[in-house]
Amino acid sequence: PAEARPEAAVAGEIAALAGGAHALVSRAAALADGGELGLATHLIELAFAAAPDDPEARRVRARIYSARSEAESSLMAKNIFRAAADES
Image (tube, rainbow, N blue to C red; front, side, top):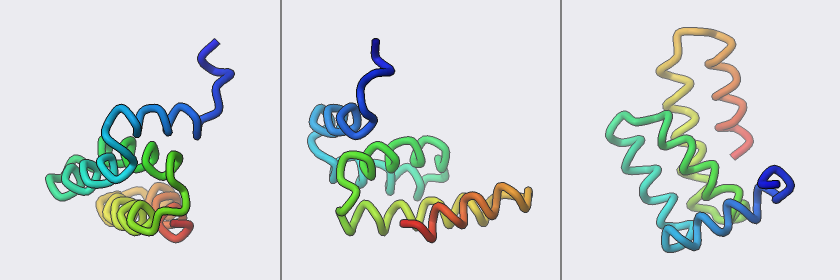
C-alpha cells in the first residue's frame, strides 16, 4: 500500500518529477509571495522532506511558517506555525 512508503522517498520522487527540490522551493516561495500560504506550505514540506539539509529550503520554510503565524488569529495556530518556523 502507498502508506508503507517513507515520506522522504515519496517527497524525493515528487521533487524529481518537479525538476528537483529547488524547483519546489522556488514555487513555494512564489505561492507564498502571492498569498497562497496553504499551498506554499504543502510544497515547502515536500521540498524539506526531500532535502532536509538544504539551506534554501530551510530559509523559505521558516519564512512561510512565519507568514502563516502572522496571518493567524488563533493563538494556538500562531504558536504551532511559529514553532515550525523556529525548527527550520
